[in-house]
Image (cartoon, rainbow, N blue to C red; front, side, top):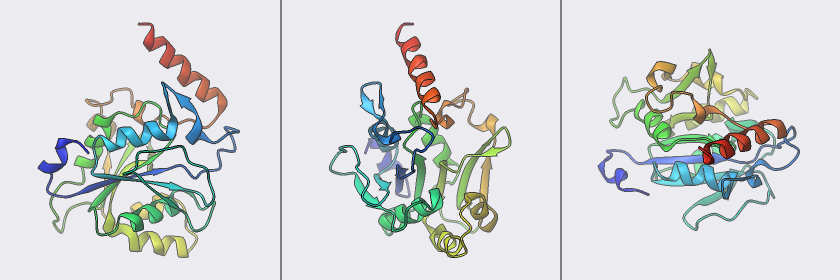
Length: 218
């Protein structure tokens, strides 16, 4: 935790999901090396720069790379139910400790701490009747629920959706006050929206490595 947290009026947590099946990648994305660290370690480190506490949500019996002692690892009760289940698991682990969370997957190689901080700011620091409970980027008409901030008070709504087998996060956006963050509102911290770039295939991973190599040589 950095010095920023002492200036905030609410506590903020981070949830990093790593329990996906990585079927298109062909190997666990959490263990992919990138710039001297593993992808899960990288995502946790960057999110941890901004928030007060981070939890990692893994699948049952999943092997997880070594993390700092202060990072909790919790596991989904049911495997294969997607990010909404991971959000519920993470929120339950952080219940009573934070007021809001930034949700991320582990496969964001170019995530910027400034981007995370900016997204969190759209929920605000004070509890008011008009405060949004979710802030989610929308770029090229696509929502990015794994780069969004959620009030912990959305947990009952998440449980309701899971019970109804409605697993798409967009259903949650329709249920609670949601602040849609448009591209121009994030352009100052991440003009190319690199923080929204994730890795699903070996080809995307190799491309990211090539970009990293090119930047090192500049």
